[in-house]
Image 1: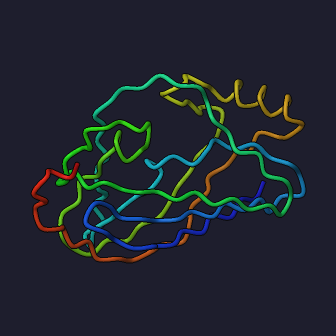
Image 2: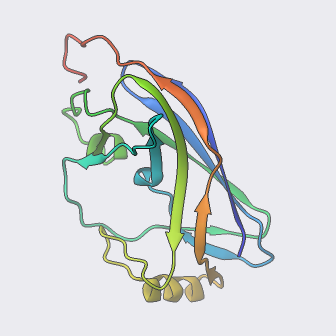
Length: 168
């Protein structure tokens, strides 16, 4: 099954790096994929080393999928928090609050990657591929399998000056 992933760099603010992922179903069938997660973003420095994601919360949640009809596209916007910025005091159940990325000043190439196969496992919901297949049947769709990789987006990360309120 064919899935197109297009990544776009939106910009950088004092508190985040913003990227948008456009997912397009190029298959003739209705498909179900896991909802794109922020940790699918891969930031590589010029040496090829990939930055590490860190979490401040262990979460148990329901599984979220994305149903796409043939030719349909959906966009997801990610707000990435570097580990150098303090975690916000308020938890609004966002990826920004939960996840941070270990990057320092410099140039990076970013891409998005997703893999769904017989070994698929979602750590938050404990869903396995058989659960995804079951959800797909309920939605009259087919569980998408394969590896999808977006285009590469170059950008330069510039850390903000220290914020007087700790990033709150």
